[in-house]
Image (cartoon, rainbow, N blue to C red):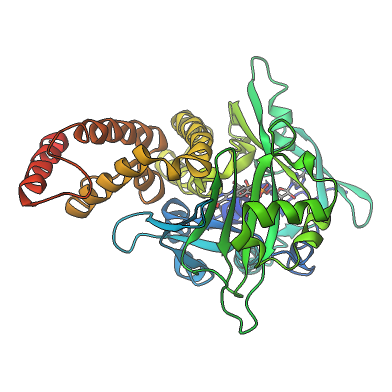
Length: 461
Ligand SMILES: Cc1cc2nc3c(=O)[nH]c(=O)nc-3n(C[C@H](O)[C@H](O)[C@H](O)COP(=O)(O)OP(=O)(O)OC[C@H]3O[C@@H](n4cnc5c(N)ncnc54)[C@H](O)[C@@H]3O)c2cc1C
């Protein structure tokens, strides 16, 4: 069966109705295109999302900026819970709070399913104005002819083959992208995939009987345990989604050591006792939920002429420890849209966007891997805490002019590569300051503060 189009409007198809595919289709409608999305899975709005599990993620400035560009920031923000910092649960039972940014800066904990459903509703709303059918669910992309271009699908509901010949094909089909596997057949294609030894398991911390959160609500909770960690992000319904990041089998403590749910509970009771008490369904979650892999994908080029282009995880899948995978995917949409508006010629825009963006994608991939060590281990290290505390003091006095690496990545549009470079310079500078005999944390008096301000002023100059 052919899904070919007639008419004057250009036709773009998007493979994947995940978060990036749904947002990009809204951008494409703004560019005046007829858009069709093809998604392998059934419609998440008509089935119980993720087998009833509530899975969330952290959305920050870059993602929100991309939503704002198409007028959706407020609608999406209403679905989220602001998290102002990290609430640390140390292994001696003590707790600490590390603010993320300065003043009101915060990241948003948001349900994946709710965000995806909202974006799909909005994508459909755009298309309905033109009497288009925008989303074909249960259509699995099986092959792509890049030159024509043509994409082929199996309609898994009706068990028939479908093909479509649009003007442009966008692959927002995630880390195992089918479009990328076809780009990889080109000569001299660069591709690199790397798995972490660690995997992850999602668990539930339900709401208390009165519907309130069992832990402080406006924070990302972390239980750092050196080689592994537990984290928890709040949901609007009073629950938290907790995620255990642990070695599959190599480390002394690893998923492979749990022979049954009882072992798992004992591990929680001794390792995360305050969390364990809040998790009545731990054994059930252990049996029901998968242990998933964590990997990084780097590849290039991301496009073929003006005919095909990768976006989001399909182009650059990263590990989740900077909370930037989706933010980077949404930022792709904004930057590609701006490149198309600026250059007009789509092939040229694909080339310019990809060439500029590739180094940024590689930078955030590497930062995300480094941040795993920071979250699971360094957040309780003395030297790290002194650097963070001094940076915090500097940011209080120079909130606009001094941004540490975390703020540059999370609360700015600074390209990731530049953010990494600036952030590293800043850390070197702060470590140098801490060697000065008159500067320590907390700042002891007005003279020390004046000296600090003078040094920072000179550095910023
Ligand atoms: C544990 C974890 C926590 C994370 N936390 C955060 C966070 O806090 N903040 C953040 O910014 N990012 C986070 N991320 C990363 C984020 O989840 C991804 O970057 C984001 O989901 C990528 O979106 P996407 O649309 O590119 O890909 P996906 O979400 O993978 O969507 C791809 C879509 O394509 C469909 N598809 C695949 N193949 C085909 C095919 N052949 N035919 C048709 N359809 C197909 C899939 O069914 C899917 O719907 C996290 C990731 C993990 C694993």
